Every structure is written in C-alpha cells, then in structure tokens.
Length: 356
Image 1 (cartoon, rainbow, N blue to C red):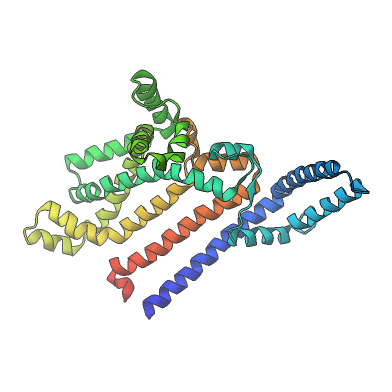
Image 2: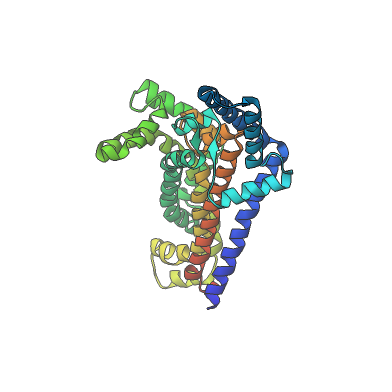
C-alpha cells in the first residue's frame, strides 16, 4: 500500500510538471505573438479558398459580406479575439487532448517528408524513428560498453587501462561532434566511397521499410553506421567518466573490502558487488540519457543532413511554427516524465532502502 501510494504521488507530481511545461511554453509563444502570426496566415489562406468557392458558385447575393462573416467566424475559432492568457489555455487544452493541429511551415513538412500542410503529430512521428536510429541507438551502444568497463576501471583506479580511458575521454570530449562528423563523411563517403554522402535517403528507407524488411534493414545499416560510429566515439568518453565517478564512491565501501578478503576475482567484485550497489545511480544516468536523446541534436543532424527531431525543432523555431513547437515540447517532455516514472519504479526494486 505504501509503495503504491508513493508511486501515485510521483505520477501526480510528474503529470503536474508536464502540464506546467506545456503551459509555460504556450505563454511564451502567445506573448511573443508567434501564434497570432501563424493563425492570421491560416485564416487568410482559408478565406481566399472560401472566396474562390463562392465565386465559382455565383449565386451568393453579397459575396463581400459572406466573406467577412466567414473571416469573423475563423477569428473566433482560432481565438484571436481572446486575451493572451486565454489563448494560452486553449493551446494547453488542445495539446493535452492530443489535438496538435497542423503545421503551416513548408520547411517542417520537407524535413518530415510529408506534403504541405501536414498534421503536427504525423511530422513528429515521421522524424522520431530517424532520431532513434541514429541518436538513441548510439546511446544504447555507449551504455553497453561503458557500464561494465567503467565499473572495472573504477575498481582498478590508477591502472594502465584507467589512465588510457581517461586520456581517451579527455581527448574526444574536446573534439566537437560536428567536426568529427565532417571528417568521417569526407573519409568514408568521398574518399573511400563506402558510406553515403547524402543521408537524406533515410526518408526513402524508413518509408519503404516494411515492403522489403530484409533488404531495407541492410540499407538502413549502410546509411546509419557512420553517424552511429561518430556519436559513439564522441559520447563514450562522457559515459566512461560518469560511470567511473559513480562507481568510485562505491569502491571505498566496507563490503567491497570484505568481497576481496573472500578471495573473489576483480571481475567478480566489480560485476557482482560494485556495479550492483551503484546500479540505481547508473540506471538514472542511462534512462535519462536515452530519454534525452529523443530531442535530437541540431548541429550534428544538420551536418549529416539527417532529418530527425533536432532539425524538426530548428525548422519549427526558425519559421515560427507555434503548433509544431508546442507538439515537440509536449512529446519530449512526455518522454522525460515517463522516464522519470520508470526510474521511480526501478528504484523500488534496485534499492531496498526505498521500499522501507
């Protein structure tokens, strides 16, 4: 009962945080006037279409009055005659009801690979798998490498392996990812010809994936292996640093010395005792890193011309596409909130102190 009540409170707090983030973003957009610009352009387009339809019919007595009446109707529908705070509440209500609306940016539609205009939800769902393929996959590979090795080097602090990995981490943390990406594109794409030079083909690969899954999977690997290698090389140093710092605090505990005294090997002590005790903190870092990867990386995606969430964010912001901005904030915040709730559940099973 106590655990269930605790989880219910955490869920309520995280849901409130989600609503607050959406509301604050909506306030910023409405105060800045982004939504007014977008809605005015939508209304103008719809009024022109309505006027053309009336002219084709040719039996309306007063076309000017009919058009003006329709314009006022659209102004009421989009809330342009309402104060800023009320428009913000309308945006929040629509987002929470999953009514994300339509994007009015041709650039957003181009990145999503959809005809203009397109539903915001469709644009996000088109870009999200591409970010998962490149960025989330890279984070998973880094976690799989860094978790066991990071625990081992922390346990053997000061060893040759420890110093080598620290040097590697320091070197590649100082190298910009976009610079490393351009080097890899130059070498693997233009010089060796064993990788694409135009990564926008990911659109066609994912759109046609289920028509021939085996062939498209091979094409997907060929298209994505260079971006994944670049990101793994760049991220791995930070992962090693983080896991090492977490585990170092555990290595000094008494139970580690007891395990050594029992004659267990270094690998067994690191895997069965050190990493297990550090697991709650390590899981927090891992899950939040995976959740954060959903947001994409604007500069890296731009270098690879990879139409993911980062480029979708950039296109939405630069074209003042309020609907897409709110939709992206909602999705990324929702993923983070779900990740936090998953951590709350995992803490109960990983740390007996939480259950007590």
